[in-house]
Image (cartoon, rainbow, N blue to C red; front, side, top):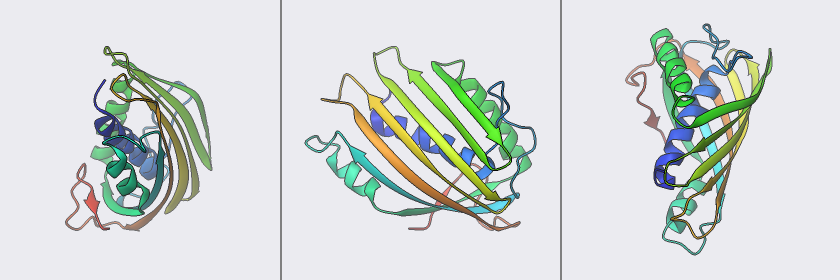
Length: 178
């Protein structure tokens, strides 16, 4: 298994995708047409991390506990590449289950295992307030032989469409605001 920081970054990418596009088909496939606006999105994320208090990762947990604001650019091409990326994860040790989609909510579970004995599970619940606003929560648990005990991360997120133009934010390259 990758180190927990790398695993966390991978899951944050999936979460960002879910927030900025938030649509899945019942067959564990993302919709071809996102139910949200194309362009610049801004997401505020607040996290709590437990299980690493007395480890070298305690600093990372404290940093993640602060509120972070990022911007990302959603385009039709980015949407398509993210669909392919999420579907590819299912072929590389990850499975999606408990998929639920309606006009106002998308939720699913993801479980990933590694050849080195690690496991990550996540429950993602995204509420679509409108084509310009979403919010949601993520509960992620990471078990890794390198960790003295499992790590749990809980995140809350609020996303807002900022406009059709992405400005200097390139698709696939997030921009940290604070």
